[in-house]
Image: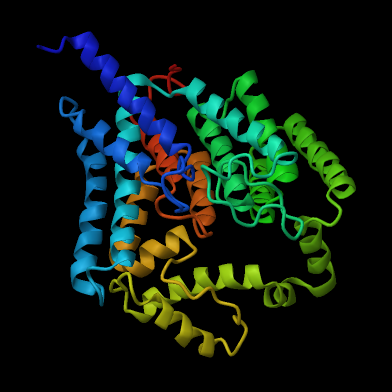
Length: 402
């Protein structure tokens, strides 16, 4: 039976929606396995891309298919072990970033930005988070739980841990702003406000709150006087409420320790911060120790051990794992100069010639130095929006879609 054009489009759209739906739920395992990160976005992105054989991809976007090819090259020629779980996982992670980025550019080009789908999933995260205060195990059968409600931390919702939940909401907000060309509608503005509130009072993630403060500081220079005043008042009100209602939380613990000890002493005494900063520094410094040649997927532990001695005990609490807790650090350490070239290409390909975009992408690159996995689909989606905007000059925002 021949497939008519409307049926082709409907099925194609359905696959695209499923791809985005699973991309927005990267930690939900549906009871099928116990892993933190899930392969569903990668699988449906692959199907969606294969179904796009009629669509000619711009060569500048086609270059992103080279990322898993580069990773394969590193896998075979620079990894000490080839057939092991660590290497295979790394390959899937790079392929996930590449395919989700290309797949979302395809979707934007054909159907526009799916605002309703994003808002529904966003709202679902927040509803589940609220319910977890009363029913902590409500999603334990479909999401691997760790770190929930421990040591003053917040809830995890449909993510792996509270910080991951905070990152999800942070990227929802970033994506809304990018998709609306930083001119959100009233409804989207409500969602942005709800996400910020949830990051502080539901997720309680100090890392993501720091990102928000940095974003507020950068935004301050671009706002008019009225919006600057609103921003300052909002920060003071939120800070006052947070101080009243977050007693005993990790956020206030960090603030108090920073005041008492100072930054360097706090980094030394806080094991979590010490570990995360070590991964950022060790991965970048390790890439230069390797003379910018790829470090492969099996050598980071040795680099950690060597650099711990070089820093004479300042970094004393490393998480000895082959997984680097830095999105940027993973690329540049494992892929070497090829990783730097990928990021340089991403940086310039995401530009539109304005100072605001230059600052926005620069800020995003700073955020990507944190412990965000390479396979985190939200990053690929955000880059897809920034890149696609460069080919949508005729309107101010990506079109509304179902």
